Amino acid sequence: MSLESDRRSAGASAVASRQSGATSLIAERKAIATGISTDRSGSGSQISDDINRLVTPKKKTTSLPALDPRGRVPAAKGVGTFNPKNAPATSGGGIASPLTETAFKAREYWPDGMLSSDGLFSIPAIKKLVLADANGAEAVINLAQPIPA
Image 1 (cartoon, one colour):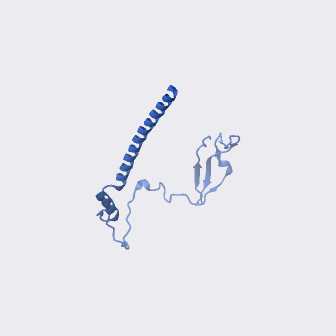
Image 2 (cartoon, rainbow, N blue to C red; image 1 turned 180 degrees about the vertical axis):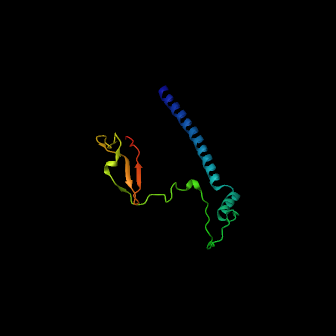
Image 3 (cartoon, rainbow, N blue to C red; image 1 turned 90 degrees about the vertical axis):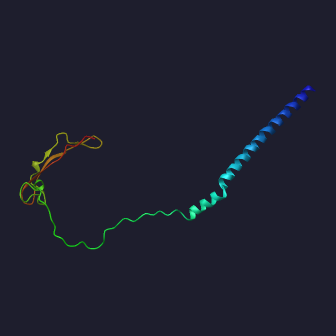
């Protein structure tokens, strides 16, 4: 009979252990529920303050920026200042359009050319292009050396 009494005492101690654990869990859960409830409900004045803040927000007193009066700008004479640094070196200045290539043989090419994107072909790359404008003046365009890909 000692085996049966051992089983009964082990069972009784297991039941007692579970009940004490359950009691403490129930107390913890009730404390958590009470805390959540008070956080949500708050005090009476807290709730009314929050509602009033939503209904009637505080007004900010800011002034609008001053705007310039609209309407037409009165007529005036234009005034400019001459800056010799910006003046063209010769009279007339500029290139008369259109530009026309006069001699195909006047072109110069870069010695290495330009490689195709796959690197299989070398494409001729223009280095210098000699053109003539509508007035017959020579215009030279110097192009940069291609950068290998």
